[in-house]
Image (cartoon, rainbow, N blue to C red; front, side, top):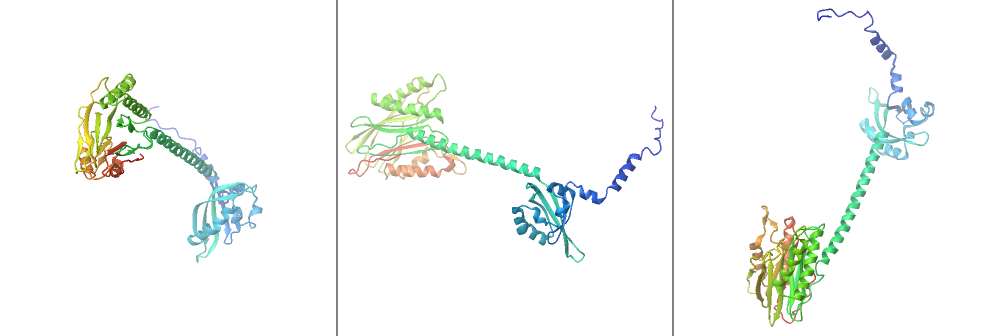
Amino acid sequence: MSRTDPVPDRPKGEATASTDAAFTALLEDSAEELYESAPCGYLSTLMDGTIAKINTTLLTWLGRSREEVVGRMRFTDLLTVGGKIYHDTHYAPLLSMQGSINGIALDIKKAGGGRLPALVSSLTKTDSDGRPLLIRTTVFDASDRRAYEQELLRERQVAEGARRRAEEDRERLQEALAVLQSSLLPAALPPVPGMEAASYYHTASPDRLGGDFYDLFPLDGKRWAFFLGDVCGKGPQAAAVTSLARYTLRAAALHDPDPVAALTTLNTVLHERYAAGDPRYCTAVFGVLEPDGDTVTVQLASGGHPPALVLREDGRADYLPTPGGLLVGILPTAPFTPARTVLAAGDTLLLYTDGLTEARTGDQRELFGDDALRDFAAGLTHTGPQQVITAMTGLLNSFGDGLDDDTALLALGVPTNRPHPVSDTPT
């Protein structure tokens, strides 16, 4: 057939047969039939609530006959006890004031004792003078919605339970970490004749084990050893290195208390232990205190650690230089820098880890730095070790979230009041 060939005509009447049948069906489908078989429930009540009309859909949901309901029951008779209370205290007053109310969740009672979750809307029909005549109410089956809401509630309860358990687990973990962290530090500093000692440990995160450590212990009847260090990294691996470093230094000091020798021993142990796998190292300061009359001689050595700060009673605050000391454990052999100073009455030696000087301050988040620390310490030269630690603790707290690393502080000093030379300061 070519494009110009005419399309054959359909037989007369064939094109409109199905359309005519549809229109005929629509004309036969009365408004009453549409009302009765609607996919939602309909009812009309008098102003006292008596049900005057109800459709088949709602009767089927209720499991009741029309004779049981029309003229014999009120709308509130279809509601549960809670639904009745809500209707009387909220639904009816709002409908009276507004003339309509939409989408209120109510439970409808079934004849067999079951419940139908429903969304109910009502409209007050008035006469030409505005006087209320009756109330028309539409009821939508909300069973699927209720099931969905209940599922959401269950899921939320499950999630809330998981959150609570996670929080409880986190609290238990923090408690365990705190116990483990405390085992890596002395419970209290021992009293040193002729001296005062104080310390502080700041944990940047309760969820992580820190790598900072310190200790103070007697060598013999006259000398005392001390050390302070910072292990690279955080967590259980760092804690293992911390424990190893602490006990290695204590053992090394009893064998040979020379500060360089103690750090050399620690270097050998760390390198032999970790060189073949995940390298682990630390910075450390090790020293020996030897009281002599009204003064205390301090011999120390440093391996890559920030220099100690000496606060003099005459108002000076200066760093004790220890240049060239290499990180402990990074090489098979490493040089360590020795230093010596003498503390007189009123002098304090302050050791710290780099969390203090690397704290971020101000709007520009600049490093706090060595100069700022020295300037701050200069205002503490007329105080003792405990007062120095108290002031430093306040400084650390002032950094807020700018302090994101663990920080250990250890202050050792000679008191000015010699009749009371002993101090036992808890960590």
